[in-house]
Image 1 (cartoon, rainbow over the protein chains, first blue to last red):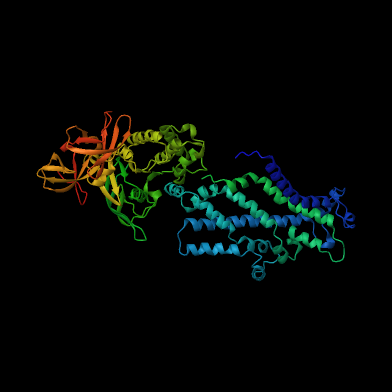
Image 2 (tube, rainbow over the protein chains, first blue to last red):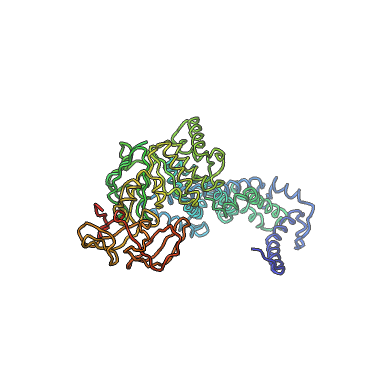
Length: 282
Length: 348
């Protein structure tokens, strides 16, 4: 479609630029704030131009943390978040691709019931079932552990449903050809289904990694040991100091650091991610 | 190379729908048998039952001496070529060819040898390292056949392999498949709805209709002596004219006119006459009212009506046709069928 209407182009670009500003401005503020000394905030006015303390602020956060606010050095927090996000992303992909495989390619009693049971968990994210889930995790002794951080978030249906749809688009003849070629179910899964869902797996990995990284409420609830704090939950702890001004410069430095890994993941997997969302090459 | 024997094979789906019944076919080693019939006649189902992709609910299927009713497709020693090729899209042509052999634990050098051989036979050598999506339809079809050849199976099963190709390529591939099969001498079962494909490829034809066998025979037998009105109307293009007629007083009466001497017991019959056997004859007893003319270049098809029935006549002259055409027929070219059952009347 080729259109040549200057006014329309102007309006469209205007709307897009406005949108970018709305999204980017808070990020810019955080970045600027992380370059000032803490005294810059006492006036109540947030500076809009870069300051000179950037290196010092980031070094403080990565090296020592803010001991008065109960924030350990960021390396540990970032590590925990990374473990949690990776475990959730990989765990969810593994569990949902296998369950989708079962549901699409095997005829077993109560298959439909199984599918709908999985599907219904879509309506039960952690936030909805948070009290019973906490009880279960506590009873199993998984508070303050990586298992407690990740397992309750792994069990959900979104990805199963996605893989089911992907598998349904793969022609039956491919399965039949593979059967004649002597591929049993597992070999078919490994040699045909996995490579064909590669881009979908990548797209899902990006989405789930960010989902896992951004988890806030759940880690806040079940971690009381700072060795298991995740960065997103820890930022909140830094901000709630009892009788002192929060170190906004340091908090913002942490926030900027917390934003980086998801950005890196998106950049690294961008090509596969876009392919996975738009391409139907079967 | 092996014989395939179907003994009274039938299929009833779980819901009670009867897809096939009474399929008895003996396919000799090295024979090329074509299953032909209209959509929904059960030909693909039958092929898939031979392949092991559908269960057999009645009768037995033998490949060689072995009953294979419950044998896994991979263990039946057959290879199948699918209509949409069913190539693995993420694998190169070479990997596609090698996959079945690899799964069977064939040694590496043996795989390489067979792939090279198949590539040479099918002239796909230059594409071995390409992905299927980089190939044209005809090349993909060759790869699909290559995948069947490398297995060196007891039988090839073809499920409408040419339907996705354009008309010209289809003709080329058709003769290539035939030559290939001759050369390899592998027993082949080929499913198609295209009667030209069926006629040109087959050693023997199996004409199916509504889940039953209508006729088994060589292409010429089926063409010259169709066993039923269905076969008569299905095999041959344009289709044979099937007209209601009467036999009385030693004459065949069509639309009220005696058209040919016929020494049979009297009564209603269905007359089958091929369009090319309706001769234009100014003194002929048959009158056809012309509806329209189709120009084929080498001939014309005159569509019209004899009595109350539609009829087609092939003519090669270029004279402008009249609104009413007089035609005559040769008694030797008349096919007579029972007016009720549609079965061929013997001796006709």
